Structure formats: structure tokens, C-alpha cells
Image (cartoon, rainbow, N blue to C red; front, side, top):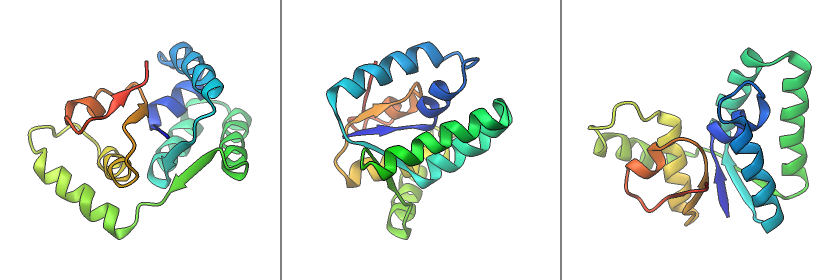
Length: 139
């Protein structure tokens, strides 16, 4: 399983994003592995909000509908941030007080990844490595 973070989704969706070429190339490589993708409802909330600000409306709609199609085809699991995940993320937030720039959404992602025993993450966000929880950025 591979967790897909906000940076990866936005990088793939927006051709003007500095991460676009790398993200699309990495996605093609991962697709050939036939791995199970996982993301969260919080990540998708960030993606939808940012995407509609960054690209034309129809492009954003097509991209989000492609994500829904992945979900409907059982290629993507969208994990909800439950109260248990929220509480674990809050515990992590307090533990990593020396890293104030890590977002609340990232902490919920860390919690989901730990819950599902996922170490691989598709992201350009170095915060996943900076917490030393064993996460490996796909490159």
C-alpha cells in the first residue's frame, strides 16, 4: 500500500505545479506496480480546495472525478479521520512541538499510515521523513 499525500495529488493535477513532471512520472511507475493506494478525507479536502483555486473549473472537476473513479474501482481507499485517528494525530502534534510547520492534515496522515502499517508515501513533502516514523518517500 502507498499513501498519497496532498502534494502528489496537486502535483499530478496542475501542470503549473513545480512537482508536476516528477509526480506524473512517479504515478506512472507506481501504476505499473499495481499497488493499493490510500489517502484520507482530510487530504482530499485540501486537494479539492486548492485545486479549484489553481486550475480551471472543468479541469478540477475532471481530476476529482478521476479520483472518485479510482475509489469506485477499488484502486484507492479513502480513509476517514475518525476520532481515534484525530486523537492520535493530536498526540503526535504535541510530541513534535519542535516542528510547528507540519500541518494538522499531515499528522492525521501519519496516524492513518501507522494504523494501516503503511511505510511508503507518494509525496514531495519532506515532513513525512522529518518525524522519523519510518516513512519512505517514493522518488
